[in-house]
Image 1 (cartoon, one colour):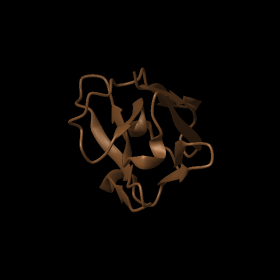
Image 2 (cartoon, one colour; image 1 turned 30 degrees about the vertical axis):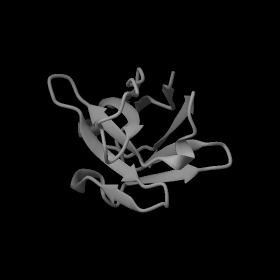
Image 3 (tube, rainbow, N blue to C red; image 1 turned 135 degrees about the horizontal axis):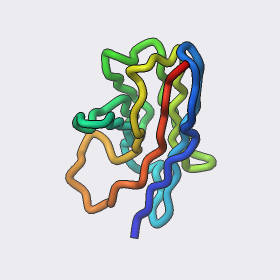
Image 4 (cartoon, helix red, strand yellow; image 1 turned 30 degrees about the horizontal axis):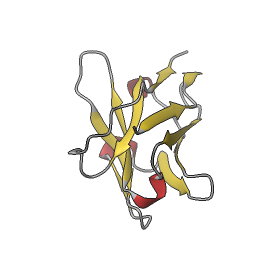
Length: 117
């Protein structure tokens, strides 16, 4: 059974930075394209950034130039470095397969990111 575990969220002031990490049990993330998604209250879950198994990346327009997705294959984690955070970045952040969502993997619990002064 695959289990995804997100960590690194928290409360940060506007303009601040956070680094999120995604690990897994029951599989090896290094073999799959992975993405970071976020869901704000009352909104749908959207892709923030994706990275292929080979390292190609894709970003939502709203985070280009501020967020960086990366892989650490030695530790089998996928990271999301978030700089210049804005209040509108406040959401629960999840990692999951990308680009295909048609898998049997369950979603993890996510990690809350709150950007507020």
